[in-house]
Amino acid sequence: MKKKLFIAGLVLFMGFLMTACGNSSSAQNEAAMNTIQSYDLSEEQYELMSVVAPDALEAITQFTVDETYKSVCVGYDYYEKGQLVAKNCAESEIPFSYDFGPQNTYGKISAYIDNNIDEELAVINILGKGSDVDETDSTGSKSPLSNDNQSFNDMESYTESVLLEPVAIEKNKKIYIRAEIGDSDEDFEVSGDISSLMSHKKMLASIDKAFVFYAIFK
Image (tube, rainbow, N blue to C red; front, side, top):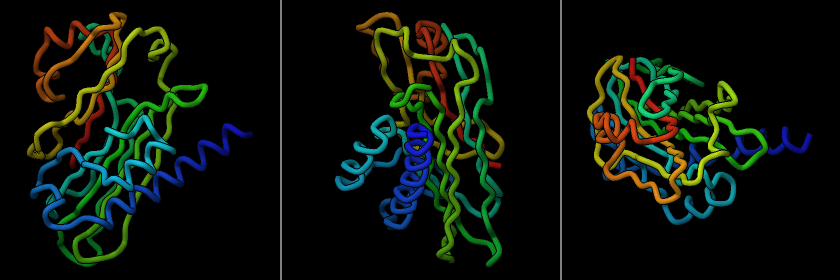
């Protein structure tokens, strides 16, 4: 029961935090039109996140799209030694609302592996807000990893690869936004951002395990 209450509380709190992030946007903080990029937490948001979801501190990206995009889907691909073992896992999708006519949509995505409870979970939160209305849609998804082999418990080191530069959004194209990486070498390091990692097959093949989160705009 305690575990269930913790999960429910964390999902609700993440929804509140994501909404707060969305409402604090300004012209200089938003992603450029039809691009996705990393999101920098404010000092207050960082302190809050470090208490309730420390695994998510580097896990938030932000995007802006115009009315030609109808939805966004977020999930992860799982790799071992550069080989794709499982794809399109734990997918969550939200539609963009255009009830009030064509408008831009500003959004935040939080996607990470939760290691703070007994069972490792993939956590995905998506928020989308229209430019002309106050209504906000968000979803919280927590899914057990698809099999027992998808775990960092036997790994000696852990690192991340994230977006360092904005990426142009293309319709129906899988855009990699973040990777969580585990390796048996305790000194293992990854250089460059997630875009470089996914295009560098030799580097990807050197990694024991990688959960690679993506976004697809439709």
